[in-house]
Image (cartoon, rainbow, N blue to C red; front, side, top):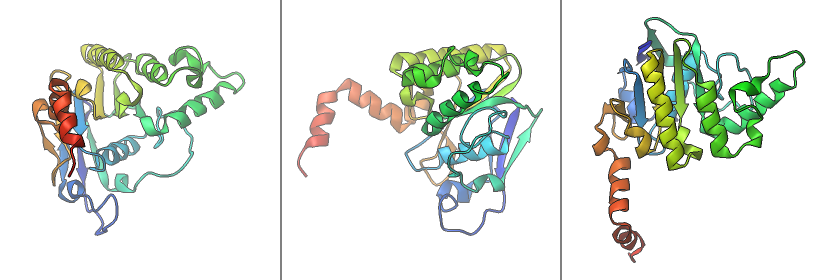
Length: 245
């Protein structure tokens, strides 16, 4: 893989987010030498923050897109990227940073680019029309199938790609990942809550739920355990959830 390792050096002695998160206080380096690495954990555990920092250090727009997409709606990124070092072998320049929370802004940026005279049609990689003219899930999947190509070595960083995808569309995304793995020219780092996506064979899962970032088995994740318990016995879980204190 291209991005082999990330390191955090000399964090400031600050007690504000994100520097106060235990996973960053204890993190020295993180091995990413795998085709697909999942960041998993509870909300607020730091997985999206680290993903964003990696994307910025890799040269991507903080709000998402490829290295050729330059737009700013709101500067909300943390300063964590300033303390992050990436180890490449070799360094790649192609790829895409997807983040569900700013996808609307990215879609608007593509619409703006489409109005530029003499510019190539930017919709060709997104289903042939504006992402705003598609359903939320359709636009997500068209981006993954059209924009995430495997023609040359590339790094793809995805933050909660399942946000608008039905279970069947999540399975379709698994097929996209499989095709990329077969090509041997792609590397993915994904932050997710989806037990469907986490089940990808051979993926490396890194848990952010403790005081440090640690590898975890699929069946040991809270996402798998809770989903399995609910699907096996929804009535029992509802009774437990809604019972009086």
